[in-house]
Image (cartoon, rainbow, N blue to C red; front, side, top):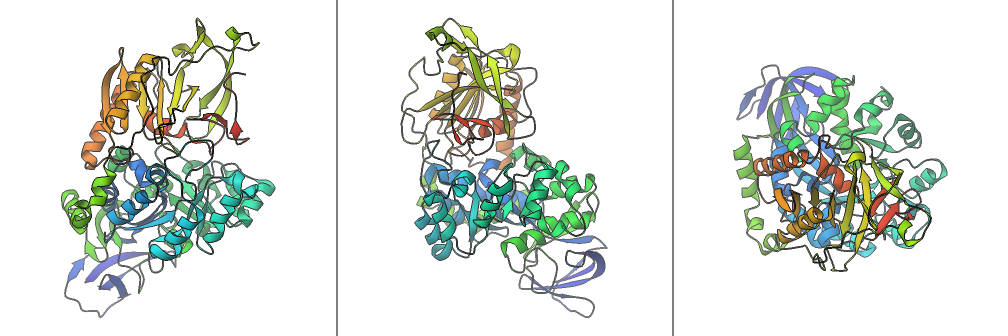
Length: 573
């Protein structure tokens, strides 16, 4: 095919030049005059942009199956993603990694995996599986060495610094493969040690000071702009002509509603440009920079020998997409793309592996005890304090604060307090029927009544519930267990107001994005009715409140975690 009259966005030279582009066998073979071809496509002066590459995403966070995710992002110009199947691996182990690999084979959107490094993420929560150094070595160097390209984010940075034997063994078996970092607020000599251990990137920078130190020390800075965690506006001022090659745009976690309504990396580019970043530089940060960092040869640029992934844009500033081509072939409408993607994997979708992964994964010991969420008052037991250590929500961040609040008591028990936006929270172990239930409080969800529950709870994905009374919380937990995982809203004395089933490991739907977003919108609307100031993405935030590798205070099935000290702490102060 010969693409004529295109304005090429050249991510190597940083210029835009108008020429014809020749494509054969799915790769660019050259540009200029004098080529002949079987097919001619007139770009009519449109901008020709390389396909976009997401360097860090958890597909599970979209609540979509991997194939459905790819069919959606293809229309937004995404040509490749580097995903960390950490979430599904924490539920069903290596089977989950196999599922992601097999369900995305032979797709126009190339799906590469980073081998999960933290399954489980810490010893302060109960995971559904365990992945050891030997497993990492087998998958990374032998079984899937062409598609598993490195070691995924090492969240256990205290374990790295303390030279934990198991953690270090995982870094060693990865050898010279890319190793992604995850070290929020880490600095000084501890950061030096983390980098010396081989962690070369970070997507957790939340301010210029933090990102500057990590950039100075040679880390590749992945600027994250997800649905809940948004760091783009804060970090844009750090980027200049000299250092831009050391930055990338990544999404990390993406709500399916945002994905459908706003887009994928195309949305991040538009937003970066709105904050003052030059369009070509934003495009570099979502294409060739990622490909270079991960060693993806011949992807992320329009040049001879590179894979013929490109986007035709009506306008550069607004990044308005006209057409998308992957491997030199035009991507069609939503329905035709979905049918094409599923047809490529028709053998997988009828396989026993796919059916097995749709089976029930909620193994809870019991939810019959009506007092399962009761929190006895320590002050009423003769101890001197009645103050609670509470998880404080920070809007727009997955970081939380430690807050000390005087407990509201109902006879001998601490209870939620709508007047102070204080909800009770529980994390229920759901993998091995241990009976573990972690109890605490969270301030900032905006609930005034009812309860919300989810089987999506980073990183071990136990069942997390937050609410204003125990009855609604218990009913919500029971309902999620009964449907095999998902999201639910309960109020008015135990009535289920809305739900979104997630039958694939309790993390993902098997339905098209239209169905998922409709159900999620209904769930969010039902949640909004539980208060007058409920946050925009309550379930996304709820899923991070049990993540014990992000400061400062989190709750797992084993108890309240002081992440700054990386140890359990008391609910009562």
